[in-house]
Length: 517
Image (cartoon, rainbow, N blue to C red; front, side):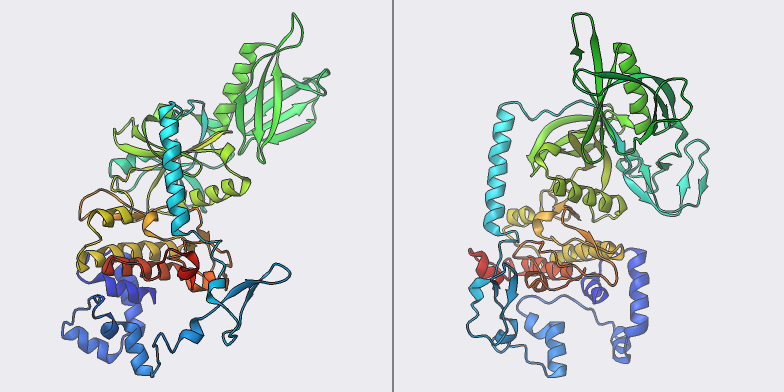
């Protein structure tokens, strides 16, 4: 089905070699003699305009051939549904022939609505104006861990020798400079825990821990690679405990005065699950040495060493979006700054899922992830700069009037990006014009799909029941809370294509319940 959509949208448009490879393979098995005859006669397939859609629609042709009645009035009983709350609080789907069911009882509260989006956008704008006016839109210059930004399959480049070797799927660092300069094949550096000799450091010394607020204990610590070993004393051969520093953040703490003569210099390690441990040194220089050694092995870096952060572009749900200049290339990028203090544990996990999906995606119609920094307070995501605004704004500036050829071109770009995502098993689940950004404001600019916060990897034999999406674009099976797969994105693609061609949404109303009905 997806390949049929691609074929419909592809006419006279350049495509990748992969498109033709899959298309030829598809036609090899499904082409009929009639199709071959049409191909020999040079028949050009085009997308139908709204006026001719009823005659040229593939669905209409199928219905005519099979004798299926698709009159909306006759199908009303089939399409009608109502969702009510049962006595136990569970959702109950009413029977189709239940006359007592009311369409207005559809529970649309779980899905993004037009009113909610407009209000959220207005509130964010007010917050941004207040933050900017008070000068609170600056970001911290504290260090952060520079995280891998790409998943490499099958090939690893040794950073010391430059030789390539086969390996399993693993996290890697892809050079942002290579992408910003337009390099076709950016060089990859291995980024695997415990295998980077540059991050293997042996450092040891005495550190104080607090048993209680008034009782202090001295231990001997040894930092070996990304593992921190603790011994009762320097002479002890068997370690008392060990902490792995993967996913750990380090934080400087203020000095503490025990009495008039004794000062402690602490720092904290924040372990996964937001579990802090505080360590104390008697000398400030010893604390600095320990912090430097730990920062080296866990990959700490400073965002400002790589990027010159400029003005604020906007405010998101959890923080600011700022423009920045990549120092090595001079190219403009976008920096998404998210405050963990404003995020729940679930929000953080959804953000990590989005990052993992973006690390897999290397497609011209999907936004490119360039760099990731993270510390105990913030997550910094650096992405390519897209100056054209979202697709809805792009259409609004043109009074929603674009040619059918341009509508076909935009639809095709969305379709090939979805085909790429689905080949990885990724369902976007919130595809809408606001989540599609334009590279520039030019009439012929390309688009890129963004915002994978609600995305999910769905396997070949798997399905999902999560009620995610935006009401005007969400597929019926999601609304009905029936098991669904990646195909829900095709429904959203159809809605967007309808908007491009007809200037209106097929399911739109001031009331959310009416849209759901």
